[in-house]
Length: 195
Image (cartoon, rainbow, N blue to C red; front, side, top):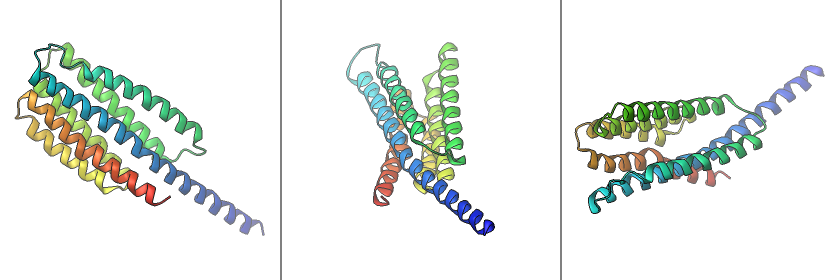
């Protein structure tokens, strides 16, 4: 009798863990869409300011939009963490992946700016990071559109190494569309149809 009870408890725990993982998987689409739209807007804004104005502050959209995104992500992530009853290995892996992404991005930006590294080099490296984050996320979540988006971002990064920095802003936009926005909307649609 006790053995049967243990088996039923184990099955219940497994079922709850699977349901929790599905819920968390559903929530991941939010971050891809949030950051996808913010980076798309910042890159297109900077491109437009460079092309159509003479302002030396063409970069101003980046710190404003990225700071806003950090605040929104922090609040949203905090609320998700409070709601989660169980943290799965997928949750932990994704947290470490994206914290690692942010730390790597900040290192590239800070050291690059301090050393006066050309944006001709920094922009493609940032696109490489976009590809890495979405490729690994796609593998963890077993979601092919993220994997394909990561690969496409890497291909765009290769092209970006050979293009002038203004046009690289358009390549950043293209990389974000294929690696964040399209997979993010597919993820959102997939999860809304499973509700």
